[in-house]
Image (cartoon, rainbow, N blue to C red; front, side, top):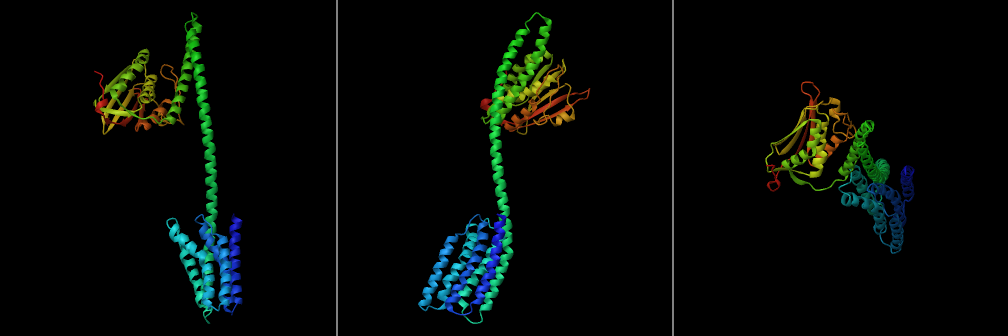
Length: 432
C-alpha cells in the first residue's frame, strides 16, 4: 500500500506538470481552449480522492470518465452550432471541478463531525479556490490578458495541494496499520476466548472426575480408621488430612468457576438469620478445638443485606470463620460482631491467634499471590479462601479489609466485611 500511495503522489506531480505544458501549448481557438482544460480532471481527481479516502470512501472513477467524454462531445457539438466560448467551456470546467465539489460536500456535510483540521483545510484552502479557477477559466480564458491570472491561481492551488497531500498519505498509512492491528487483536481475542472456553470445559470435567474419585478414597479411608491396628489407624488419619486438603481444593476450584459465571439475583437476608446458620455450621468444629465462638449482633431488626444467601454464608462467612478457627490457639475465642453505620452493615471477625506478617496481609485477598500456612493444629488450606471472600463481597456491592498483629501481648487477626444496609421490615427476623 505504501508503494501505491507514493506512486499516486508521483503521478499527481507529473500530471500537474503535464497540465501546464499542454495548456501552455494551446494559445488560440475556442474549441481547442475549451477541450484542453479537461486534462485538469486527472490531477484534480487524484487529490480529491486522497481526501475522500481519508473518510473510508472512494470516488467513482467510471462516472468521471463517462462525464469527461460526454462534455468533450458536447463541446464539439456546441462549436458546430457556433455557441460562444463560455457555453463550450463551462460543462468541461464543471466536470473538472466535480471531484472537488464532491470532496467539499462530504467534508462539510456528511462527515462534518469527524472531519479533522487538515481535512477542512484541504477543502477550504485548496478545493474552494480550485473550483474558482475552473469557473474563471470558463468565463475569462478567452479574454486577452487574463491567462496569467488563471495560470498563477491554478499553479498556486496545485502547489498548496502538493504540500497537503503527503499528510493524507501518512494518515492513510497509519489507518492501514491500525486496521491491521485491530484485525490481529480481534483474531487473537477470538483464539483466546476459544482456548478459555475449552480450558473451562476441561477444568469442569477434571474437577468432577477428581471429586468422584476423591469421595471413593474418603470412604475407603474411613473404613481403614475402623481397623484394630494402631498403625493402620494412624496412617488413615494422615490420609484423611491430605484427602481433606484435596477436597477443599476441588471445592474452591468449583467455587471459582461458579463465581465467574455467577449472574443470580440477590435477596434480602437478615443478620440473625446468617448468625444462626453459621453457629450451626461451626459449633462442633470449634468445640473440637476448644475455641469459643461468640456472636454479637448490634444491627436493628429491620436492617437486612442483599446477598446470595448460600454464597454469603458458605463462601464469605465460612471462609473467614474457618480461617479464624484454623489460626486460633486452643482455649482462645473468636468474636463475630455485626454493626450498622452510615448505611453499611459491618461484619467483624476477630480472633486472638497467631496473626500474620505484613507481607502475607498485603496479598491476603489476591488470587495471583495466594498462599497457605499450617494452622495451630496442623490444619492445611488451599490459599483460595480469602480471595473468594473478596470476589463475592464485591459482587454483593461491599468491601473487605484486614488487619493483623503478631505481638505476643496482642496477637490475632481482624477481618471486616462491609455491605450496603437496606431497610426491609418484611424480611427482618429475630432469634428470640
